[in-house]
Image (cartoon, rainbow, N blue to C red):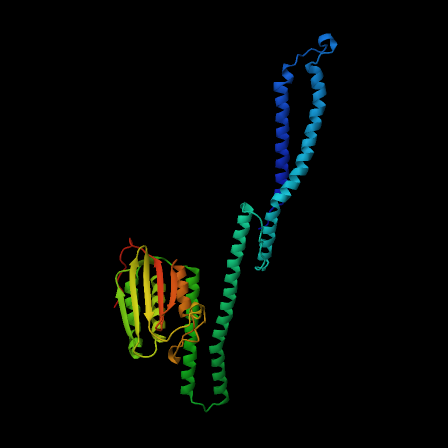
Amino acid sequence: MRRRPGLSARLKLTLSYAGFLLVAGALLMAVVWVFLLRYVPDNPQGLLGISPNRYLLVRTFAPAAALAMAFLLVFGLLGGWILAGRMLAPLTRITDAARRAGNGSLSHRVRMEGRRDEFRELSDAFDSMLDTLESHVAEQQRFAANASHELRTPLAISRTLLDVARKDPTRDRGELIERLHTVNTRAIDLTEALLLLGRGERGTFTREPVDLSLTAEEAAETLLPLAEQRGITLDVTGGTTRTAGSAELLLRMVTNLVQNAIVHNLPAGGTVTVHTEAHGDASVLRVENTGHPLPPELVPTLTEPFQRGSERVRTDEHAGVGLGLAIVHSVVRAHDGTLDLTPRPTGGLLVTVRLPGRAGCPAPPSPRP
C-alpha cells in the first residue's frame, strides 16, 4: 500500500528529546524567576548605587539564559538524534530481515544478542516466525513436488497404454480398457485425497456435535467386508465420546485409521481394535492393530505425505496413495487435537487421537442404516 511520505521515527524521537529538554530548561528559568528574582528589590539606583537589584540581575541573567536555551536546543537535537539512532538500531535490523523475507529469503535471522528487552523479544518472536514459515514453505514445496510426481505417474501410464493401442490395433481392447480404468481410478483417488488434505489444512469447515463412538461404528461397518476378506477380527469398544467438528472429516479420519490398520495387519488372523472414551476434557480414539514390528525411527515419517513406510507390508489392490495418515494428521490438527503413533512391542501400531471434548454438546443424530 502506497503511503504519503512523513517524518521518520528517528526524527520524531529527536524532536521529542529536544522539546522535552527545552521545556525542562524553561521550567528551570521559571523557577529561578519565581523563587529568586521576584524577591530582589526593583530599585534602579540601589543602595549607594552599588547594591544588587532586579533590573541589574535581569539584564545580566537574560542573555545567559537565552544562550543556555540555545545550547539546550542544539544539544537536544544532536544528542536526541544519536540516542534515537542507537535505540532504533534493533528495529532497523528487524525491518531489514522482514524486507528480505518479503523478497523470498527465509533463511536470514536477526539473532539479536544482549539481555532481554522489548526489542529482543520482538527479534526472538520474529526469528521463531521465520523458522515456522520456512518449515511450512519447505513442507509445501516438498508436498507439491511429491504430488506432481504421483499425479504424473498414472497420466504417463495412460499415455503409454494409448500409444501402444494406437500402434497395435490388434491388441485386446478389453484388457486395455481395464488397465486404463484402474489407472484412472487411482488418479481420481489421489486427486480426491489431495483435495481432502488441503481442506483439512485450511480448517474451513462448520463445527457441529460429533459422537466418535458412532463414527467408529460407521467406519467399522463399512470396512468389515475388507477385514473378513483378510481374516482380520475387527472390534469396536467404548462409550459415547463427544467432540465438535466436521462429521465428514472425522469419519474420513477414522476410516483411514481403520483401513490402514486392516491393510497392514499381517499375517492373517490378526486383530484390529477401535476404542473410544472420554478422558477428562478430551475425547480419545485409539486404533490398535497387530502385525509386523515397526522400527521406531520409521514411525515419525508415517504422517508425511507420500511416505508409505517401506517396512510396512502392502498389497497391490490396496496400495493406497500414501496420504492416509497424512490426511489423519491434517484433520486432527484442524480440530485442535493431537496424534500419537506408538509401535507395539509384539508388532503392529497403536494410534491415539485426542480431540477437545464437548461434554455439553447435544447428542448427534444416529447414522443412517
